[in-house]
Length: 126
Image (cartoon, rainbow, N blue to C red; front, side):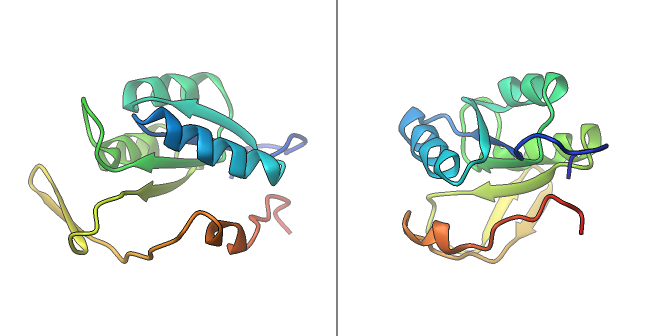
C-alpha cells in the first residue's frame, strides 16, 4: 500500500516486454478504475517506481535484460510498501530458477475474463 494518505485511485504498474499484454491488462484494470502505468522492462519499471507512487506491480517473469523475479526483489528493497505479483505464460511446472535461488510458487491458470472475478483490492486501510 502507498505510504501516507491515499486520495488518488490505486496505481498498478504493469511490466511486460510484450506491448499487447501490457495494453490488455491496462484496459482491464482501467475499466475497474485503477490508474495504470506501463513499463517494457525492469529498468524502466524501477525508474517509474522511483518517481511515481505505485501500489501494485505486476511483472512478467521472462523478459530480455533480466527476469521479473529479480525486478520484484529489487522493488521490495527500494519500495517495500508496494505489493508485488509475478505472471508468466510458462506452463512447464511450478519452479523457476534465478541464479543460485530456486523459487517454488503456486500457479493458477486464469483466462482474461476470470481475472475480473478476483476480489477488489481495498486501499482504504479499514
